[in-house]
Length: 370
Image 1 (cartoon, helix red, strand yellow):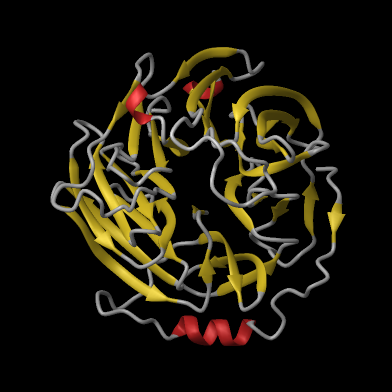
Image 2 (cartoon, rainbow, N blue to C red):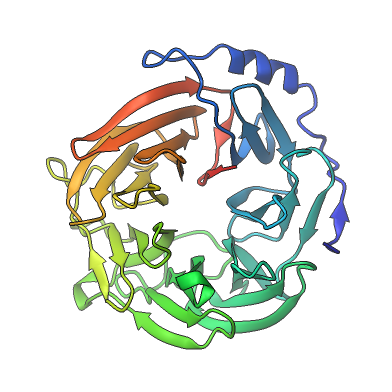
């Protein structure tokens, strides 16, 4: 892959490795006696260094990146792509077998910033990234050559696109457009609160041509559609939402089934506000029976049935956001900004923690099982 090579000058968590491994060996768990045999990767901060971390039952390996990263994508050659957190100025390709080797990086198109997400076409030749004009917030999807990272075409999609994925075996590219109008490099409240131009787009997977545009009803104009997960059927998509107006409670999860409109899932029963109007990550288990979401603001993992959309229960974990389905049906891993890692088993009665441990790492928003 002929992408610019860059040596990280801030050091690869120098001096931290021994302390990390020692802390990792001291598993803190009241619910299980062993760390599961799983390999996970996440963007993370260790000490004052932005980068990522790979953890498994044997080791914890940190690596540095040019700045804070967000979401992760698995590439056909086994490498992992981490995209800079919005407004990101880089995307980095890391070899999970040698994470401290030189990361290969590429940049957004001129005048733009990465929105934190990318998707790989099933044909193994095309990469797409969501990018935002640094001045206006207008967004594009950029089709890139997977081998070189070079941009080949751009498709305008609206204000502030975020997550994206391929469905239908690559026939459709699904894009969550957040719709919050503000310049990509400026923090602060949106300038269009209460009338957010949010939607989910279904685009033709090869050309980016518009197939369908899905928007919520008039009473849902404060909702920003952001994070997604694809079901094992390769067609159904779960969508996580954040609400820019907390004056009243609105749904925070939706499902898009092939050929249908967006279906909003109910708020949690008992405490309808437990997610605090914010979903940070979404996952569907390998059986396709359960969909989970995390809310770092609420400190809660939520669980719904994919069959009937019913709320099934929650699991409390402070600052939780990372979420990944395990290979085992009904199981998920979640991570927190406080270094917690929990394996959860889902059922129609809710969640049960199977394993729980802690490492000296501030995990970022997203998690990938490798």
